[in-house]
Image (tube, rainbow over all chains, first blue to last red; front, side, top):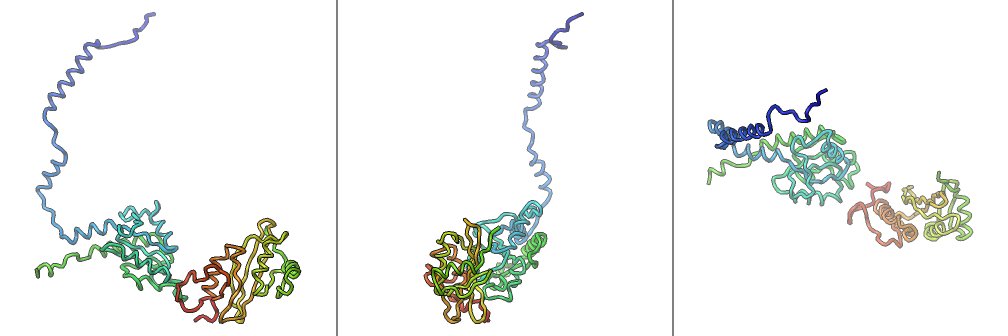
Length: 205
Length: 146
């Protein structure tokens, strides 16, 4: 019986090295010029078009697409707010999931819960600390009218609109996370229609 | 399971030490004279065999002609409990001795009772409103409020 050699080559080692060297030389000969970047090809297409928009549309698009919420949740509606932020309802899909502990970095206030008169000055202070432009969503029956506490009103504020202006009201006790998301989308529509620049005043100058 | 002590048995022990301090007693609870509350509280906490070292709660009830302040006491050592009550007949300036010196947990609860019923606890270190704000008119949990 013949013993097979340990290494079997079609080519000898020297031929293999020579082959490899040829491949490298060929590639080097082909690659003397840099390949154009992909965005240059995109530029050729864009040059044939002109994009037109209004300043209002651009500003409103930016503002409504990044609504940051100030943390101010005095009562139980906050749990629906938390659920809306969680993985099941995933508020992050709409770009409005970030909660800001500092009101100075926020532009939306979701007033989730009962407000007592003792707490009212603090909520108003948080609202005043939010930089313009700012919006307020009244979430739940208590935020709208005082809810079930409205009849015993010695300590409960009958609606947040007594102390701060409210843009959107979301009914429910508490509202489902879907309702909250819908409410924020309504607010986004409201922001989209906002006029930021008064053309008449500009023309008067 | 916590055993609820008979008010009558405890009442006889209290009567031995402070005679005339128990107004009435039943199987469920006993009513203490309002000016002896602090003495009786200390006695219940420190007497061997009773050792009521834990105050579950203090609350109050408006019974129209008087206020009733209710204390539920427990002994963690013997696992038994007792309910004692005290009455205030003065509607204008109701007052009771504070038990904060005996059970620290009474601090905020006595302030809450003062806030909502207007019962002053004498000897309390910080007797002021807790939920409502300074300057609020009236005491909302009284039956004649509004």
